[in-house]
Length: 295
Figure (cartoon, rainbow, N blue to C red):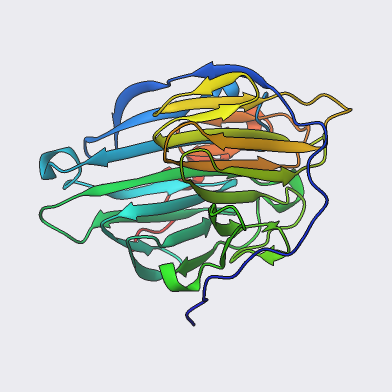
């Protein structure tokens, strides 16, 4: 299904926008079989940005930076969302799921009680750019059956505001447009926002939701704070604030992400995210004893 561009429905403008509480750049690292990336959100921000656990950004025109990909590895207890800005990626997992996404597509995998999967580039040269976001599962769902969904670029709903801002609604809803993915409990909002210079986006948001912005092209103004390219901005949770207002300082593109916090303990050991040390120990034993079967 191809979703045409549309103009978002009229809505009450944000009267009291949130301010930026924290700015950071993340750190350069590598993962998988040596894929070079930037870890924008790591363990130090898991409680502050509950229910989000991790955000990695990768961007390179050099095959040596990405070609080895992410061979078979296990997960349990959370959901992994891969959004590909440029390139082509193949997913396979031990639950029998397989899919390829191209530029502008999304792979959404819920690891649940456990899965072994791989994410491998389906290209030998050219640009590879995108993000992987980890979304926590509530304790009651951590041992649910794994599932997988791929959403191609043309299947992601989008709208253009009267001022010319383009928004792709990957998850949640914005301006009356329902996104490609809806998740219960954490109710994630995931928007890819294209802001021409001087244009704005106003996004209503309940004050209890944690929210952040990652700018990956240009610069964005949030109130009197400038968010630069490759910078993470964490929004305040003041109870009297009714949403978020973004203004393109230059032509800019950014991910706007928000979700309802779980307020549950988080214990992470590498690819496993559970609520207790005992559950982590069980996950490691299950993997070593072959109860998470590789494809």
